[in-house]
Structures are given as structure tokens and as C-alpha cells.
Length: 493
Image (cartoon, rainbow, N blue to C red; front, top):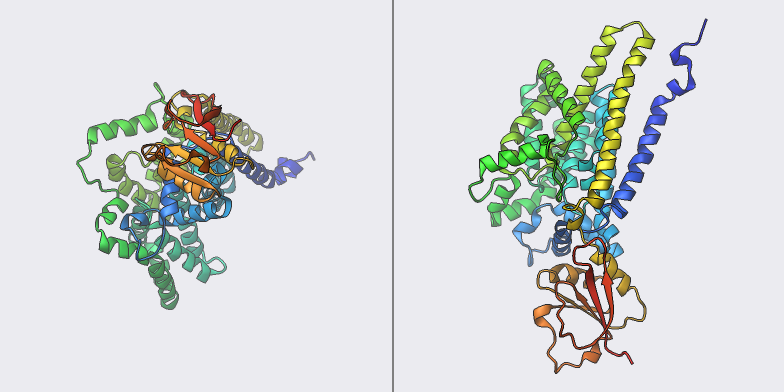
């Protein structure tokens, strides 16, 4: 009797090999994205650094607006304090949260779908340009993925009576409290609560939970959310920000057009801070299949959660079309449902013929491979060479840190424009013997220039009347204005 397909070693170890390959791919992609592509900092990242530097829980200096994304800013503040201000320290919190988000995706997909569907879906979503961009961006965009994934994972762990259920209950309430600091995240909590109210099995599980253990979880949540409550009491407009309610009348028609361009404009794709359309055509087809599967299997708990989530987010996205990351997890689940639908329907055609079942996987493998390589290629080439994309990222911090690492530089004055001063003040705070001076506050001529051995002037602040002797011009070939830094020395002979 000949060998069956299941007898081959490669078949038996397919998931172990798949998980190992995916793990190495994720780590490699995050390293490449964090260090090399796009390789610079955006204005949003520099603004995040300023916000993280100012984050504090002191009642004397407390600003209600500072609670927005406070958990992320505290994490970034810790990274800056430990490692100084550099590209990697700015992006490190997002890279770590991105890695943990990938782990959560695997756990969630394995709990809700068959293992083969989980592997294929994970490969697709972690190689999309959307995930790679937010995972390397030193802003709070990554927390939308992190909160969504781990809230669902912890809820599923409790519902499936996993080990350490008490710990998972505390984790669930802690995540719910911390996620409430992020704009639009309250809608995730409302979607979960709505699914519990509407789905009979979920209501049954909640009724069986221990009241004492629930009280512990609620207490932990109240402690963590106390600064947010205090901020809302002092400034009620914070609540509007968290729910994505604009203070002015939005242009609904324009917002709808923006959403269509972001997700469905395959005829004239554009590049900017975020390349659009966000997902490739193949992914969109899988999403459509997932929606069909969602409608036909609306009795499951996951269908209730995804449906409630989508209904709640739809009007909010029309008002705030820029919040692309909030849709990532629902899209991931719809892609998984689309892949599951394809596999299930094919296996029904050939329930007993293993060779026909295997042959049907070849077109799907080509589809998945095309989505993976096109996603990686689009991200790498788009953020490296896209004329409207690459120019949004500056390498000035890397070049400045190279100059400040010179042990002979002595006392250094960094002259910046007024807009640049807040960010470079954070750099100076974490770099010894550096003083930041906005252009309109340059010391008067009566102040001896010799107090500074080195003067560094940014492109935006440079004028032709700097009195010390020009020592070097630092250029960047990736910028339209290639002269980025002017180095002056006050004691050249």
C-alpha cells in the first residue's frame, strides 16, 4: 500500500514550520521597517515625542488633554528616558506593541478558525503595508490593533474557561480601562457589551462569572481609569475626542469620497503619509467573501461581535475618515472568514479525494503568495521611493545625533525654527551640553559667541548672517532641500 499524504514528515510538521517561518518573517519585517523603511521621522512622530515628554500625572501640572493616548505616551516616555532620543527609541514602543499584536492575532485566529485558516490569514495581514506602517510609526496608531486584539483574546480565554481565569479577568478589565484613553476605542467596548447582551450563550457565560472576581476586575479598572475620569470632569470636551465627535460640522460628502479612495480606488492609487488604497484588490475580494459568510452565519458569537463593531464604527468613520487603523482587526476577521469560506466550499466538492483537495489549494497558494509579496513590495518601494511618500519623513535627527556624538564638539547651541523648537528641546534634554535656541531668540551680539564651541543650525532656521565660521554642511539626498544642517565652529584657526 502506497504512502498517504499524511505520512510525509513535511505534512505532519506543516504548522510548526509555518509558525516558525511566520515568526522569523515578522521579526525581520519589524526590524527592517523600524530601522530602514521609511528610515526617517514624520511630523506626527515628532509631535508624539513632544507629547510623551510632557506626559505627567502630577496634579499641579496636569492638563486634561494630555490623557489622550496616555498609556502609549508613558511607554514612549520611558523609552526616551532609557535610551535617549533616536529613531529606534521613538519607534521602540510601537515595534514592541506590534510584535505583541501579532501574537494576539495568532491566538485569536486559532480560537475562532481552523488552524490552516489562521496561518493563511496571519500571513496576509502582517505583510500588508497598513500593519507594517503602524508597527514602525512612533505614534499611537498601533494601539488600535493592540487593544482590539487583546480585548478579544482575553474575553475568549474567559469564555473558554482557560487556565488562570482570574488572571484573564483582571487582564480584560485592565485592558478595557487602558483602552478607554484611546479615541474611538470605547466603541470596541460597546461592541463587546452589545454582543454579550444580544447573544444568549454570551449572556449565560457572564451570569456564571463569580461576583467577587468581577468586583476585583472592576476595582482594577476604576484605579486605572481614574486619571481619565478626573480629566473629563475638568474638561468635558475630552469625552468628545474619545468618541470621535468633531467640534465643527464635518463635510460628509468629502469624507465619504476619502473613505472610497482609501479602500476602493484601485484605478488611481495615491501616495502620501499613508498609501492608498490601504488593502490590495485580492484582500478586498476576500473581505467581500467574509461579509457574505458573516451574513449567512449570523448566529455565532463572533458574527455578533463583528456586526456590532461594524455598525458602531461606520458612522464614526464617516465623520473621522483618518482613523484607518481602527478597522484593521474587523478587516482581519473578515479576511479569515473569506478564506474559510473558500476552503470549506472546495472541500465540500471533494470530500473524499485527497489529491483533488490538495490541487484546489494551488490557486489559493498563488493568491496568498501574490498578496504577501505584493504587500511587502508595495510597502518597501512605496515608502522608499514614492515621491509623495518618502518626502514626508526626515532624517534630520539621525544626522544631528551623528554630529552630537562627536566627543570634540564641546558646548553646543542648536538653532531651530520656532516650530522645530519643542521637538529639539526634548533632544537637548536627553543630550548633555546642548542648548536649543529658536531662530527669533538667537543671543544678541553682545553675548560672547565663545560660550559655544559648536553651533548647529537647521535648514528651516538657517540664514546667511550667522557670524561664526562655517565648518560643514550636512546634506540628505532623500530630501527636496538637501542642505539639512549647518555646522559652525567658533574657535577655528
